[in-house]
Length: 470
Image 1 (tube, helix red, strand yellow):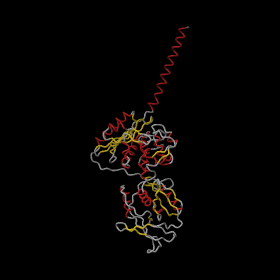
Image 2 (tube, rainbow, N blue to C red; image 1 turned 90 degrees about the vertical axis):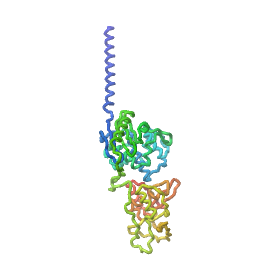
Image 3 (cartoon, rainbow, N blue to C red; image 1 turned 180 degrees about the horizontal axis):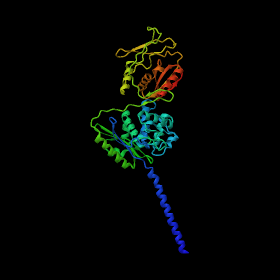
Image 4 (cartoon, helix red, strand yellow; image 1 turned 60 degrees about the vertical axis):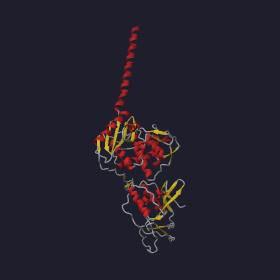
């Protein structure tokens, strides 16, 4: 009986060991099956020509490469006056609850946008990325819609964003080709911000943070960006850019097995790019995004509007030429500002008239008699006339943003007036100094016209709200 009992116990032990072995084996299978696929892309950044690609159009998880789009839109929003780098963003519970990597923000805390941008670019902080999206669009869902609109405008045809940070979410996918395209746009569209990606560490307001890409930046000659990404579903991703002499190469890797193997592969791809790229290439910068029609508007919106013709003011129909007020739509100074907007330069012109009137091409509405005008001559003899409002009962207006300087506000008024001449025709451009900055306003409109102007500008992605009487 004792022997039989021992044999029975031995069988139980063997059976248990067998079950444990099977459990261990099958537990490892999903990890192998779900291993992130590999994809790569190498381009000459100067003209965009493809040097190498492998699975470049396969839709994969981008992980924190997503934050390149979050940052691209942040740069765009600052450029267009939607938000300032010094705007203090209030952190929501949703943003504060994002999992690591994070800056450690607390719900209700206020922090300047510039620090959120640094944290997202350098540390790849998820809470900072979510806070940026909420600050610009009001919610992460609305921001994701803007991300997808921008991706489409940039030609990222196989990318769909669901969030601002890149944590794995069903349907949140991109490709090596699309992320390479985005990296090239960041470099050329916003060169003034590109240095962020080469910082090995930076001040993020609440603390100093280190760059997640610091190993490649330290060990590869000429490397100066751009963005890392990692999740279990994605593997180790990286979009890297390096410059040697007059040559610049961008290399993208999806699905690396570790930081070390990913960096090694990216270095090999960059080396390949520098070997194969010609020394001299005509630089062909990518075109800035052109946004498609907004739902229900039927309008195509271009983010940067260039002016082909500087229109001269004409007299209002029906008014006697000798009694019609001198209307100044574009003084020499404003023409200069328009030319500067074309060339993307920013010297400070001396603006004499603080309120000027746009030329009218529509029949005039009945107005009160015009007050006495006081013309001012510029240095070259151009007559500039500023006047008080003759709008009669037209006491409404619109505000198109608050800016850190009077020049920035005046420049925005010029750009907006040229973009939306139909509804802003005949209104007064006005800069109002506030404690927090300078408000750019168009005044002297009936309520219906102000409402229409605001809706048309909002369809163009221009910040706008109405200003009532008083």
